[in-house]
Image 1: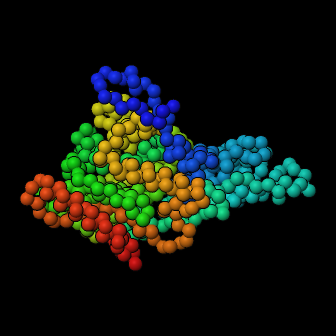
Image 2: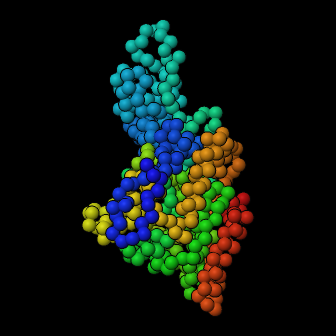
Image 3: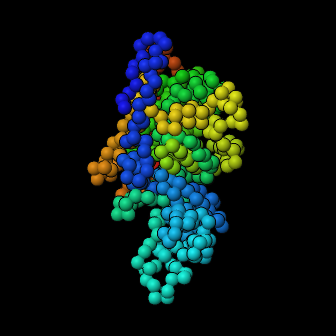
Length: 432
């Protein structure tokens, strides 16, 4: 099948557009032994919140694998293959005990590391449990999240801690979790699409954030040591508001505060939210987020954002289909691109440069792993807080003499600020 649909150059030519090309499998397929799947498995992935693990096991699907998570009586967390190695019964029906999880069918007991602790019914002299292990993955709990490393054991990297997670005057708290019935990539790309905040979230559906988001920004994109940022600059009176939203490779998004208006001068704000887009399989994905809450006098986090039960607008479908049609949001825009977006049907423009750059970064990471190299963003050693670059900054710079000159001034200001932040990361400096 062709990799691209034909470029239509005449009216009423839908007949020539009936064949839909295949998706870009290298970027979008995430199961075991797929290129992107192996790439994602080289990184620690969040699989659930710590407080999701109560007295019952939690069934998971991550990167096309069926798993079970639990916390035993010692407080240790296990992430194991879902099906018991004895007869295949699902451990989601297992009994969480003082140590490990016991299969409900025949009572085999598994430790959090996959050790088979007991095989009731086997002869006393049986060595089966000494000769066999159940599939298990290394686990790390941090910031109210449970992370699993699902890659080759000998390739396990250090656990990354980003400077935005440990900045003075802030705490991170678990937020919402969303499941989208589509491929991870079309969700992840949304962060590099600054124009949609002006159109989808302001013009189409009313001001979901602040009215100032309705101003179409001047756009730049810049690679960082850990990923990519967009630089969207807007004129607000005598101020230039520079906004940078960030993708940290492979699948962490950081979003600057959406309550910004650009009316008052502010320095580097840092993110309001860090969230991972975790592929569950090729056609379903999980958003799992941390919220950044200020504890510093004079820097107030809105009360609705502190309340974990409140969600960011547009992240899930409304009650009725008609309402979704009248006020579509992120969910409708991303899920409706097909279960796996077909790049061969797209016609990308100038404002999509960040999307093509992001795809290029992920593709390079996939190929680096395939070549036996460490991809960008993977840390072999514990290097301390890792710098990140998501922020709002508002500076007082009166307009230039002409509209065209002012657009140039905005772009130059955004680039200057971003370069300065990459050279001297503000959150890293604050943490020292």
